[in-house]
Amino acid sequence: MIKALLYKDFNALKRYARIMLVVAVVCSFIFKEQGSSLIVMIYSASLLLTTMAIDEREHFLRRAISDSGRNKAIVGEKYILLFILVMAAVVISIILEMVMAVIYKRSIEWGSMIIIMLSGFALTSFSGGTTIPLTIKYGAEKARIILLLCYMVPAILMMWLLPSVNITLSTFTLSIVIIIFSMLLYLFSFFVSVKILEKKDF
Amino acid sequence: MTILETKNLRKDYSSFSLDNINLTIKGGEITALVGENGAGKSTTIGCISSITEKSGGTILFKNKDISLLTPNERERLAFAYDDTSFPLDFTINDIGKYGKLLFSNWNYDKWNTLKERLSLPEGKRLREFSKGMKTKTEIAYCLSHDPDLIILDETTASLDPVVRDELMDLFQEYVMDENKAILFSSHITSDLEKIADRIVFIHKGKIVLSVDHNDLEENWGIAHADKSFHPTKQEGVRYERIRPYSKDLLISDRTGFKELHPEISIDDATIESILLMIAKGEEE
Image (cartoon, rainbow over all chains, first blue to last red; front, side):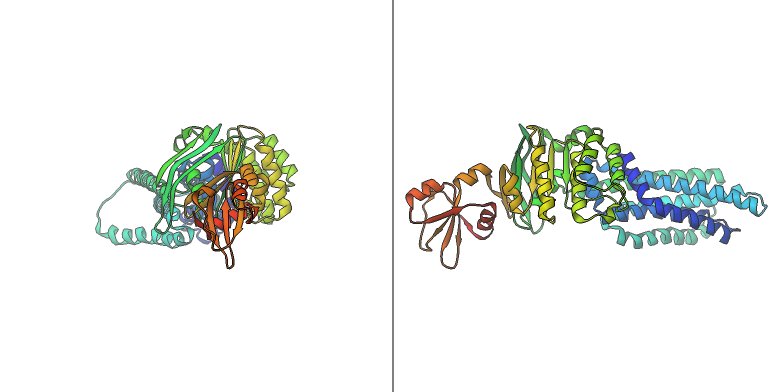
């Protein structure tokens, strides 16, 4: 079932993916010093919301539930899709960074790049983990506003909290913390989404 | 052979309740679920398809609780709606691939045959399809995984008579197999007159009448009596509707009634006339 749903979503995202590639290339040149990884990751994760908006417009959830009655698979596919999208963004970012390094004859700063990608991973996990249940509950239109808040709240919290916290973490420790945090958030969000879908009337 | 059975199915909303729906769908039959808008047809179908969470009761598919069906068993059920639910960028071939990935018993030969028979264009995207084309796609998709029960929720409501006629033929062919059945919800009663074997009338969330179509055609009638006429319980009057100058009576035994009241004229009871009697009349 998940294979069929992924096929449907990737098919629906084909033209958006092309735009994503163009955005990624353009951003790489505009932000040649800072890098475009974060933008690419955020854009990529936002494609998840596009698939959910399409599902809502076409009443696809009604079709998927009627065909299978498997709410867990239907919800789970969205998390798998988000993960694939974020991973695709990571790969694209690395390739672009390598290309930029060749073009501008500079060395790749892997350390800072890993930090940026981990931040992107944490941010997209947070936004995705929050957006999926809220979109199922309230629909894609309201979820766009929620998505904005989802990016703003952690950013403001981090800006507010970080200066007062005196913790130094190695890149390795930070990676572990972010991955564990993201996995826990995914799991929690997944079960909440399944519950919401079970209670939802179409 | 019973394909689907609902026992005391309930769904409670703040302003509407589905009240103990007991429905039996048998193999080789087309059962029509008839009622005015808001009567509870879609809620009943929603509970069966799991898109609506039921408040109580049991739904059995081939004697097994529908919520306990394995994915393979669940594939034996199909639901068709009034529009296709696939992304508008999908082509017919994309739907075929999706079906193949989703259903273990997806039948590509059948899908191709139906595509041809229903003249579904391969190259076009769904956004270029007419409403009729989309509905035909929905029906072809449902038939191609070879289900034992197809549930149609107002699927043909917005189609022109030519497309509807084409689909009615398809449905009749499908139930020639005694192990297959159709539950058909519609308020286009002319379609149901053509193909339904059993008519179930639903009103305000309750099943108020369930009648075999042959019985309905042979024995039921609408009697047009004087306003002062008061039938007794033994006369088989099921519903009574007061008109400006007369009283219409829905009777289940027109021969018996004619013998008792030869002076009263009786018309054939059609599904539409019964629907009106139920919606606008009073139960006796």
